[in-house]
Length: 317
Length: 267
Image 1 (cartoon, chains in turn green, red):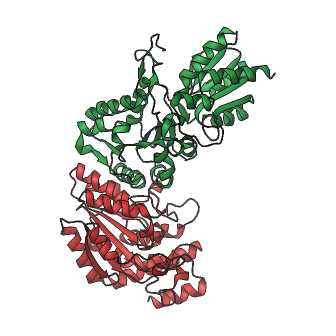
Image 2 (image 1 turned 90 degrees about the horizontal axis):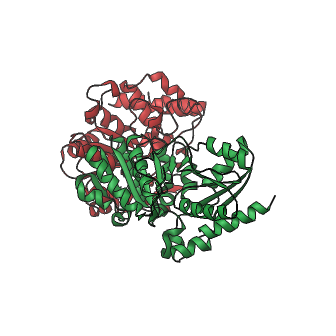
Image 3 (image 1 turned 90 degrees about the vertical axis):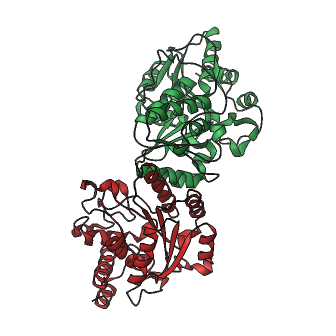
């Protein structure tokens, strides 16, 4: 399932390329963007199928409801812009039009999380998963590498209904082997077995967690790593079994600790397997400008910081 | 037509009375437009999705979703569904939701609306989809004047113009009142016709209670290859003396006495 070589690729490119492949197979797919097509890489689709691409300009509310109209007209619609503007700006349109009518609209938002970097707080979506997760009939996905982006976009194209797929601005380390990894919408993914602690994560923090886990291994701590590319509907079985075994859970996400994966984990465990959980993410705060690595370090999401937090947590017995 | 619209008005009042809530004022201002639209202009099979011509139907979007009683009454009286369903308006489990819901799968209801300022963008998307599929039908969007205070409406007007959507017809039910009072006092839209023209529309202003004017404006828009908007000047609460131009009837149900009086006026 996992690759054994090092490779870093752009998830936005993976998205754009996947759209072009899908566009060739399915003439019913249309793509919308709001003046960010070169950033989101929907420009690849525009170049391949100009008739099926609509640039809505800097008007995200209009874009979401136009997408709804196209979906009412029978189209499968992919809508892209930055996560910040794809969610908060048009939350009403997403709730009352896209989700309420269960329309076939796939919101693929790039630039999710603190790693937007230098643009700072106004562009760092840290609450988007929380917003999207709370809307009925919305499904929420946070892929961890380009192969998973590719597979989830393919899944979205053939699965009816509203979806929110969040991809980061940054390039991602490849994790999954395209030959053997198969995205499963109905389960969390066990990346590594362990007995001492469960680390739950998704998105670009998966590679940080894997690196932190290697460091933990060196001092004798066996971490079990669970990757949850599907935040909603949240399939808790793998989590429950793991928590039963390790009795300690850490959630790591490039998002606020309120309302995201950490909340989904706590909601499930409090009901099915009460366990002590710590949530690592941005701690109810806005972001700020900085380089991507600096920000990961500052907000406690780098492999080193995750390692330190887990050591601290393990000492509390 | 007068007998038909009287019947619709009576149904609207009975529905709102029965539900003890709803929006009579805006329903009565737009019901003449709906009657003409559905009787004379739209091609929409009453068998709805069971019709072989379903795909070729014209699309109607009630952007001012709170006027749902007018739409439900029109559809019921034309046979889209059994008229007895009107008794369920706003009642738990009914397909006749307070605001139109496509989720409820009521024949005749194209889209869900209710949160204002979204119907026109939906119309733009539908018009684009029809154009892509080379279906010659048209999309008709009925908006309220108050909802034009929503910024997203102007985004949609820009989109319609940019895409030269000559398969989209915008109708504005301009009754000049909104919940808190006169639109001109709250946030004026004037000069509305000039604004729409500046956004690239052919604009026609009509008396929204005159059947001939409504029909001729809609026919012109239907046959036009330009982007068309119709400003229908209307009276909120039209047809019931004590409701006319009275903002307090925006979202209030008549009591038994008031219903009786209103129904008598419509005989």
